[in-house]
Amino acid sequence: MRDVIGVILNAKHLTALTGAGVSAESGIPTFRGKDGLWNKYKPEELATPQAFARNPELVWKWYAWRMDIVFNAKPNPAHYGFAELERLRILKCIITQNVDDLHERAGSKNVLHLHGSLRKIVCTKCDYSEYAEKPPKIPPLPKCPKCNSLLRPGVVWFGEMLPQDVLSKAIDEMYKSDVVIVAGTSAVVQPAASLPLIVKRNGGVIIEINPSETALSYIADYRIEKPAGVAMKEIVGEIKRALSLETP
Ligand code: BJW
Ligand code: ZN
Image 1: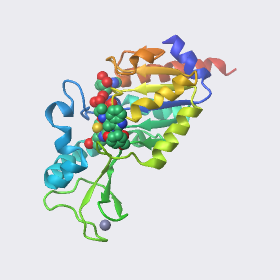
Image 2 (image 1 turned 135 degrees about the horizontal axis):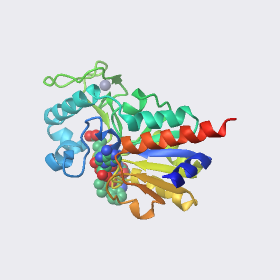
Image 3 (image 1 turned 30 degrees about the vertical axis):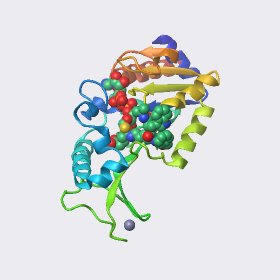
């Protein structure tokens, strides 16, 4: 841990790539693994544009259920730890695959959502979008107030392009980064999983926080095999101690 603190304190541009594991301690289910959503539900029946076209009611009901969990969840020490690192001007940006808003609710300002947000509901035909305060009640299927077409969750499904502006900002951040913390992701979903490779290829450092091995573990320079909440609490505590020792 002492080496990791040194790397973080000496980083010129530190970023983080986060995944579902970071919100697990808030009670939000992850996708893969024993208790993961994809263990109980089939992604091809719920998280593809084809599934939505086939059965929008089933897909909407599933998303309304997940919105309910996420909107009632609270940030955990991992979210607060990342927010504190940004407040201390150490962390420059969070690139998240998560569709919850727990990083923002913990106080993080510079957050890029690669896979969209459950807070966003968008029209399938026009440019209409709205902020979801609460999950829609299904049925009826939600319709666009502008053009009466079907509304859909503002998330990125398998086979869909990621929002180009967000992805290109994330790639820019990776090119600027000399250190990236990769936390709570199995690193199997592309193109998100390949982003830390940019840092590595440019001679940078990958710090992985995950209790289990992942597809990226083999190139990680440091692995912290702990839940993200525990690890981030320790990291922020050590960093604050080091900074207070530095000030005369
Ligand atoms: C803890 C913890 C604790 C637990 N503390 N850690 C190249 C090669 C092969 C395939 C492709 C490719 N390029 C594109 C594809 C296809 C596809 C893809 O990657 N498929 C792979 C699965 C093979 N990608 C796409 O379709 C993407 N689109 C795209 O690339 O467009 C261009 C294109 C299209 C088609 C062909 C080619 C190019 C879109 C991907 C969209 C992903 N969508 C989802 C659903 C979002 C909406 C929703 O929420 O319903 O995004 S899938 C799901 O996986 C979700 C997540 O953001 C994403 C990543 O999951 P994550 O965060 O890693 O979670 P888990 O559950 O996998 O892992 C949790 C981890 O936490 C574990 O490691 C635990 O150990 C750990 N953990 N507790 C710390 N307390
Ligand atoms: Zn519309």
